[in-house]
Image (cartoon, rainbow, N blue to C red; front, side):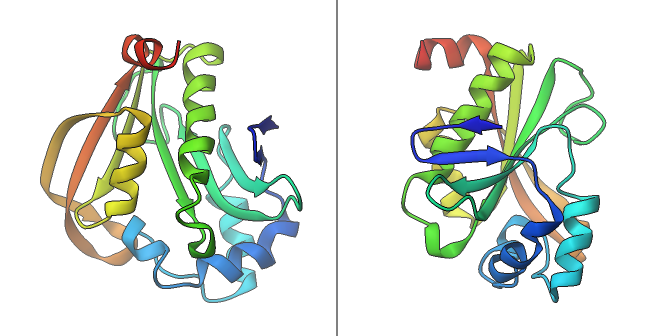
Length: 180
């Protein structure tokens, strides 16, 4: 479990399925990040078991109630297509729409960057967003990510689409310049 000023980052459990479904059924949330809205609590349970189960995947919760309102994850080698190195990973995240604009995602993702560089020995963290996802782009800007490249034909398999994807990078050296 990780804690920030306002948030708890903890492992997902099957007891989070109802709140996950409540927020992930919203068509404003998943599709912009590349996944379809959830259709049932049962589907959300399966996603907790099979998708939100990574070694560094956390439910993002407000401290007051510990209810899952989003996810933040460091996708380690073997679980990302952005790198094949063991000392690099990918940052992924989403947040329920009622909580947008509160600064929760930069706060949560900032804690995972700290963990990546100080505790997990990462040298680089990759992060991307699809064209048009201004909120995700803004989170990465706030965190200090630097543009790396754009892919004009990026497959989005869960939605059977091809999109423009932008990839950003944070090195340990750059992170230390910003946060130390």
